[in-house]
Image (cartoon, rainbow, N blue to C red; front, side, top):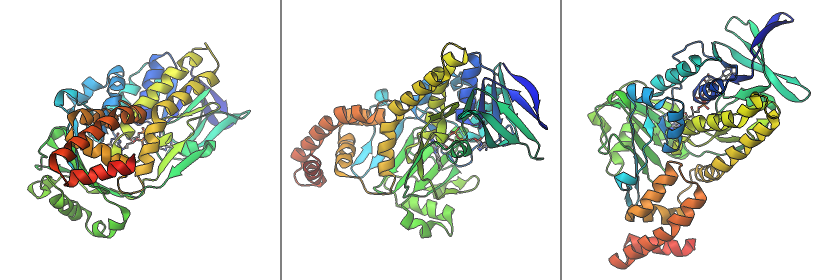
Length: 433
Ligand SMILES: Cc1cc2nc3c(=O)[nH]c(=O)nc-3n(C[C@H](O)[C@H](O)[C@H](O)COP(=O)(O)OP(=O)(O)OC[C@H]3O[C@@H](n4cnc5c(N)ncnc54)[C@H](O)[C@@H]3O)c2cc1C
């Protein structure tokens, strides 16, 4: 039950759960916990209900679509102009394009529209209060467990929020994680990102998304609402001097040199060219007594694979389902937190390991070259690659089903064409085996 009392000079409000961060993960968790009957406070530092994350290409993977449907968000997103794109990859061996009927569809809606929608959904859920303009700066603790947070508004007025469960949904630089002292592992990131919205430069495969995995550089086109396309590049750090003086011109030039890419000169940059230079991967232990982390606060991986938004929604769902029995008084909270930690690890750890390994900026290794080339040559491998890339199957299943088929595809290609690039891939296979 929510309540209020005086604690020294400041008011203390009581809830079943207090969530720090009113973006995708925080508002999804609040909505599902509110629907499960909990009294929830979402404490968000931005005072603006229309605030949104600026640098994000917002391609939500198909793995998260069931969560969006459960939240009743998919329809409002489509009404707001969201697209349902598949994704195609241009690799050095050609195109990876699964048969359309087997390719999963994600969702793409600009964060300028998505974030206010998600926040509005939480705010309209009975039992949920969204408190804007409150920055959390401290945790409350009792006997080793987190029991809430202390926040201050823009005038410095403090407020305390207490709850048996505190949820850190405050993004990749999570202050809640830092204050709680949970273990954090970091993995280096060897690329930088620039991206911007273009009008009038439509990629050939629109409305589907296209990524160019040019080993080791990466670029992408994400068609989104209102006829805009978010074009992004992620080259390795050594190329930063080419981009820094005039990032917009450098991105346009970059696309001119990509194989089978649209010319951005045909369009117009609609808004600023956005950049992010540090994207160190962070993986944190997602629970502690009285505390859970969701979204980027728990796992902030390389944006190159476009997984963060989907996993923000999905981790919020896993947490809400895991702790709902405890918040109804049916079991101890620790049991729910253990369930969430196991689920988070089972669903994401394998993916995260592969993402972190590639994010150094290194070139593709033989097993990856095998899979990528096989997927470009055989639609069955492409379909497996697609199921993995859209995060519907994990790495173990992808390797078990994809590698034998990729070997066959490459062997057939090598036999049919003699000693061309395929034969070189065949040599790679030998090294990988
Ligand atoms: C260049 C780039 C491109 C990307 N492209 C994609 C993509 O195509 N697809 C994809 O799925 N993901 C992408 N991502 C990742 C995605 O943006 C994040 O994974 C996602 O926003 C995580 O959502 P979240 O709710 O966990 O955190 P955030 O969206 O970061 O929200 C955190 C919230 O916490 C609030 N907050 C922070 N500190 C406090 C505090 N002390 N007190 C109160 N409130 C606080 C913030 O104001 C914010 O509202 C990209 C990221 C980058 C950098």
